[in-house]
Amino acid sequence: MDKDLNKKFIMEVREMQYICDRAMRGEEVNCPECGEKLLYYGLNSGKHPAVYCPNNDFKVLMDFKEENIIEKLGLDKSKKK
Image 1 (cartoon, rainbow, N blue to C red):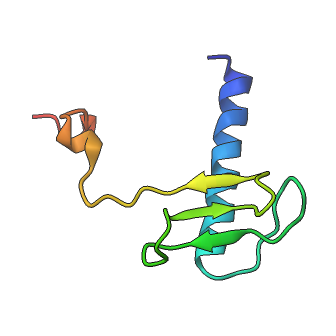
Image 2 (cartoon, one colour; image 1 turned 90 degrees about the horizontal axis):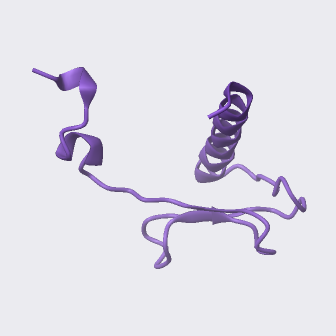
Image 3 (cartoon, rainbow, N blue to C red; image 1 turned 180 degrees about the horizontal axis):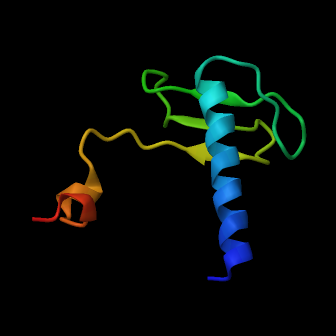
């Protein structure tokens, strides 16, 4: 992957994480595309946990799992024997 493209991708992921973190803390966060207030559905909402725009301009589905899939598959390089 091109270094500039990789850097842009990482910045976009960090921006999405920042938006989600703020929404999960209960802050009012506007959609980066249309400006509408983003909605957050948590674990006990009865819906799939997500931060999304009511106009479908932005959506991040969240997956809260107890187990670490990287460790489960034996791919965690920091724990090699």
